[in-house]
Image (cartoon, rainbow, N blue to C red; front, side):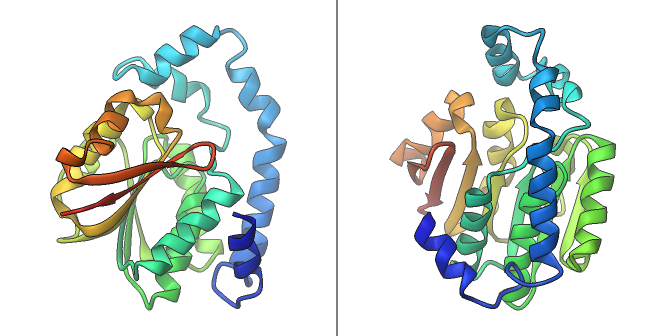
Amino acid sequence: MNALNSLLENCMTTLTTAPVAPLLERLFAQADAALPATRAAFADLSEDEQARLMRSKTDYLDLYRRLKDVPLPVSREAGRLLYLLARGCGARSIVEFGASFGISTLHLAAALRDNGGGRLITTEFEPAKAARAREHLAAGGLSDLVELREGDALETLREDLPQTIDLLLLDGAKALYPDVLERVESRLRPGAFIVADNADHSPDYLARVRSPARGYLSVPFAADIELSVRLG
């Protein structure tokens, strides 16, 4: 990942120049500063209870309501990876599950800008976070590439999807990863990338994408990402 970061730092791209680069630096710094508040949201939960909420398809709402005022960003390295994957595959249509404050969205939209344009459909359940994400996309000059759908992703991704999807990012409620994949799977083009953050909290999802019989090739990447490619 260090080599990828060095490569990007030496290139003039939407990601590495103003207004996006300083905006991302500010947002990552704010996310770092919010870590104590994030930890405090879990203070009254045991590790077992946290794991149960992460894997529950119903009670996860309690978990995310606790976190409604704090950013839940991808790492700096994961953001760079998203940009590189989207650029490398020439992505023009991207779907994201879980925008939070829009840090990952900015990386993906920057790639679309540098690819010559496209459409990014992103989703966010919490209205306050959706509002923050919209502000950040406007500040980065990328709003024209992004459609932010507010509400339950299982509903907002039910219709009006691109005919083909080049990249899917899963970074919302981990228990819903298999269901969101099911929503968009028929639109994933051969060679499409699927990036799942913290996928170890979704064993059903991992079983699906790690089975060649289901049409994927998948590997763990870095400490917290499952990187998959649609084979056909």
